[in-house]
Structures are given as C-alpha cells and as structure tokens.
Image 1: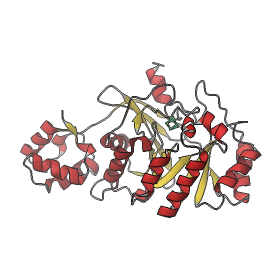
Image 2 (image 1 turned 90 degrees about the vertical axis):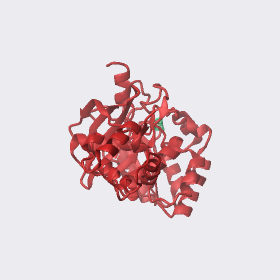
Image 3 (image 1 turned 90 degrees about the horizontal axis):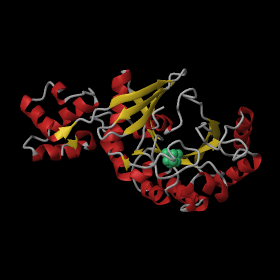
Image 4 (image 1 turned 120 degrees about the horizontal axis):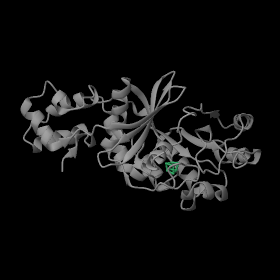
Length: 343
Ligand code: SF4
C-alpha cells in the first residue's frame, strides 16, 4: 500500500528517499512543492526529475481532498466537508479575522467523548486521522480559497489528545520552516480533559496554546455534559492544568459554553472564579451552538455579558467569543451528521 507523503516529517521523508535509492537532499525540494506551492500532483513538481516523480508516484499518495459540501456564512465563515479516500468525510472550518485566516481542523472521524452538547455525539467513532490527513485540511482550504492560513485550532471533530501522536506529528509538519511554517504560537490544542495527556503535553517543548473545554463548575453538572468527567473529574483536571502552567509557564485558555438555565447563573460564575482565580489563564465564553435534538439553549446576550463581567470583576480574565457561522451548520459535527443522514 502506498504511504501518504503528508504523514512524513522532513526527516522521515529523507529516510524514505534513501530507501528508494534517492539522495535525501531531494526531500527539501519535495517538501517545498507540497507545502509552499501546494501542488495537487507529483507531475506538477517541475524541477524534480521525471524518474523521481515516477518513483514518488509509485510509492506515495499526495492525499488530495475533494469537496463534498461547502457552506458559506453571511459573515464569511466557510465550512467544508471533505471526502477522504476511504469513503469517510470530515469537517473543516475557515474563519476570517482582522489578523488573518484561522482554520478549525478535525482530528478524528467521529468522537468517543460523547459530550452532550456536541453534534458529533450519536454519529459514532470510526477512526483517528493520520498526521497527513490533518495537514491536508489546511492545504485543501488554501487551494480552494487561494488564501494563506495563519492560525489553526484543533477544535473540529474529535478529541485531539486521543490522537496524540498524529496531532504532534501534524504540528511538527505544519510548523516546519521549509514547509507551511505556521508558528506554534498560532496553533491551539483543545481537549475535553484527558488528564494523563495534559501531563504528557506539558513535557513537550512546544509553544502551542492549550485550551480546556470546561463548561461546568461541579462534577455533577460536568458528568452530565461531558462523560469524560466521570473518569477525570474537575479536581484532577485542575491539578493537571496547574502542573501544565507551572511546567510551561504558558497561559491556559478555558472554554465555557453558556447554556440557558444550565450553567449560566451567578452561582456558576462564583464557582468558576473559585476554580480559576490566581491561575495563569483566560476564559472564553461561548454562546452555545444549537444542535438538532440538543437539550441546550443559548444563554441570553444579557446573561452572557453579566457572566463575563462577574468573572472580570473578580480577577478572572474573560471574553465572549464572537459567534461565527451562526447561519450555517457551524457546530462541530453538524454538517457531517446531515450529510450522513442524506439531508
Ligand atoms: S465536543 Fe469535542 S470532545 Fe466533545 S464529543 Fe464533540 S468533538 Fe468530541
């Protein structure tokens, strides 16, 4: 079976070239064609000898996605459903901010975590994506829109830390100066709270931002919203976060999706302050996305602002995330779910 060339770091590619009787220095040229010129075929690598192009063709795939569906929001947010070569589909979202383009990528086909408010729940878990399948989401969007993406968040379908090695390899590839050259500071990894992996991440020497999907301040509520909490409760999650901060000296971002009469009252805000006060962190308040059959309704704008003000007045820095793509199926997993159901 041919290997996906985008699964390989530059060093891996150098080794692979040796195995097919080629000089390792060719790897840099190939890497440039793939990540800087974003070519769709080996044929397009015009300064590579015909013989080597043939060898590449025989040994590797370039993993080029085709677009199954694309939705465009009034605010310019674009949501893609990409066709994988094995018949599966994944979602990727492109958002435009003042500072440039940001992409939200998926890391798995489906998700095992079962968060109550997530459209991916109920569709099932199929498999994790390889590093190359993660990286190709960036390249496919850049080819389609003819833009350069400057920021990336691992917040699409899947739990990134449940696909740890491939996510780390994808970051290494995205980050490489001879390739896409996306600064690690512009990459954010979001987790539902896989505590052992947070400890593992703390030991990596990387500049990415860690985001924790917290969403509740009591174990009772969090157990209900995020079943992962039954394995790693809030106390163990907070201990891991404190260790991460102490080890990396990096600020953690806590995601808190506000759902009406669920986790948005003053008592919740007070408990959140108690949990986070004194920590090097920032809270992102998110108006929860409405999903089909979901039990959650978005908090009122007034309540969201009250919640934010309470946190800020009590020493926890909080901002409300701008809602993007509200008129399309922007909640992760929604578009894939629709297409799977043939709507
Ligand atoms: S919110 Fe994220 S971690 Fe939770 S089920 Fe959805 S994709 Fe998985």
